[in-house]
Image (cartoon, rainbow, N blue to C red):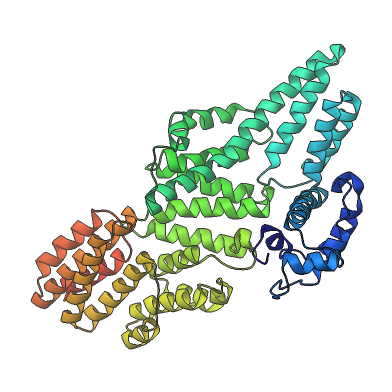
Length: 487
């Protein structure tokens, strides 16, 4: 019984939930005439741990029916009924906390009963709630519901045909805005599912759909539009173009400008989401020949920090991926003090699960760039992970340290074992595989060039790296090759 769905649900209860649930369970309309209060009180005795050996169906049955022989069928029926009742309580408790959902359901209820004056009143209430808020994830969804209801209402008013048409247009506008608001997030999730986790594209039509629409023409036509949410519409559309027209960096600069201009209109959640979507573009479009997008990534993160939204939808911690991206971008731009200040100030805000290792990894990278290799090794020595991409990242840092210390045998061993690991593991994401292979290939060439002091070869390799695909720490390789050229 301890591991049942019912007990799992009760583990999420707080003290206030228990009080409300007991009152809820008394209603004969909801409990189908059964009295569940005694059963609830017996189970509640085991709260909050629910780990006592006495928590069994037999024990609770004996408490409820002390003079009767245990019947498993009776207990199963009672516990199943209580579980359904608890789920209904969860739903109604959520409904009571959501004015939007109450307004939506109330308008539907009036519509089903044919009470169109009641429907109109419910729609007005829902509209006023929505209008008083910033643009959140469901904003245009609820605006569309209001306009759909008004279309239905005015269809019943033969003398208000013009009003019906007005709300038909509004309904279409809000449905499109709801799609445009959510589409960039859908494309982002699909992009990283395919590229980071090698998920198949065969069942994913989001890119097929988005790629078949001329969003560039659409956003240009908006310049002549008098639509109320014109700038927001452009922001959403340019963010879509970051995925469907990936190579056109003008889309990025337009999206970044619109994001900053529209920032105060967005809810906290969308402020964070669109900041992350735009920074994801600048992060994945870094160039081996220029640090401009690394600097832009850092700029966007600094803007989000200034606006106090870098903690995002989580509210209480910084996700480790953007944390590491900030440090990598600042290091790539040569802004080591910014990276160090960021680590020292915000590492405490990393999720507890990742805090120690992520902060040590980032500090180790910083100490490497400051030529304090022993300190970097000290930070990395207890680094443990079962994530192959994290292991490869660690091996990259070790390779750099061995190169800097002139430990070429250690470097060769690390590079060879890393390449062998990559070739043996088919589950490594393609972008992580390709980036790691490039790094290990080039650091081995770098070590050979350094030992021969081959300046001409160094110059050729710099051009090869700068002309090729970006990969993590490529800027360090270029700097080391240029040092050899200048010697």
